[in-house]
Length: 320
Image (cartoon, rainbow, N blue to C red; front, side, top):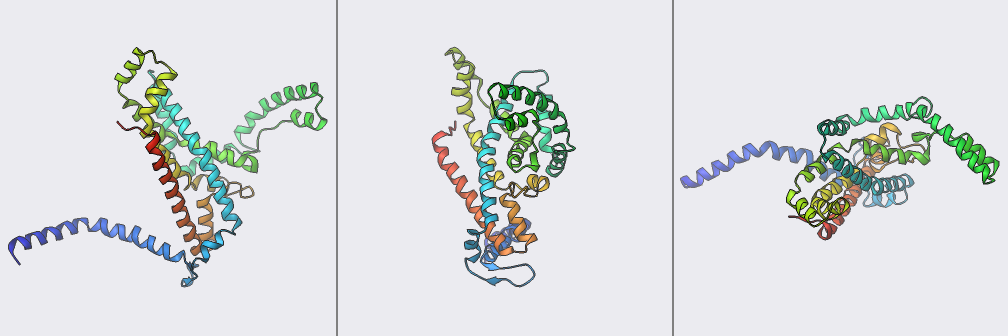
C-alpha cells in the first residue's frame, strides 16, 4: 500500500470517527425502530410475548374497527377545517402586526408568547376555563346569553313560534363546550388557533422580504389596499404559504396533546384523533402490532397529502 493510500485511508477513518455519533444515533433511533415497527405491523405483538407473524391481518382488521374509522374521520375533519383556518388567522395577524405602530414589538411578543407555553399546561388551563359549571368563560357568558335569549324569545313570540321554542330561547344558556359532543370538536379547532405564534412569525418574515419597489410600482399604477394585497403581497408570499401549509398538514395529522389532556377522546369519542387511538391501541390495549400498522397508515396518508400539496404548488407557488 502506497503512502498516499495510507493517508487517504487514515483520513476516511478520522472522518468516520467524527461522524460515528450521528451514524450510531440514526441507526439506533431511526433505522432500527422503523424496521422493527414495519415488521411488527405484520405480527400479533403484545410486548409481553414474542411476536407472531399474521401477515396483513392487522391492516385488514382496521377496516372493520369502528374506533379506528371514527378517529380517521375526526382527524380528517380537524385537518380540513383547522389548517385553512389557521393559515388565514395567522396571515391576518401578520398583516396587523406588520403595520407601522409604536407598540408593534409589544403586540408581536403578546401573539408569540402562547406558542412558548407547554401545550399540556395550556390544555389544563383551558379545560378549567371552559368548564360548564365552574369555568370563568361560561360565568361571563351567562349574562349576555340571558339578555340575547330574552330578545330572541320576544321575536319568536311575534312570529307565533311554538311554546317549546320560546321556552328554549328564553332560557338560553352558554355552550357546554368540551362536555357536549356537538361542541367538543369545534372547541378543539378554536383552541388550536391559540398557538399560531410561530406561523405568524414566519409570515412576518415573508412580509419583510417583499421588495418595497413592488409596492411603489403598484402605487404608481393606482393599486392600493385590497388590490395591492391581491396582486403584490399574496403572490410574493406563496412560498411562505406553501411552507406553512405543509407544516400544518403534518401537524394536524399528529395532534395528540391538546385533545388527550382536555377530553381523552370524549364525549362519546367525538374528539378521538388518530394519534390518540394509536396510543390507546399500543400502550393501553397492548395491541402493538395493530398500533404499528396504524402508524404506517398514518405515514402513508401524510406522504400522500404532502405529495398532493407539492404537486399543486407548481400551479400557484411563485418563486423569485
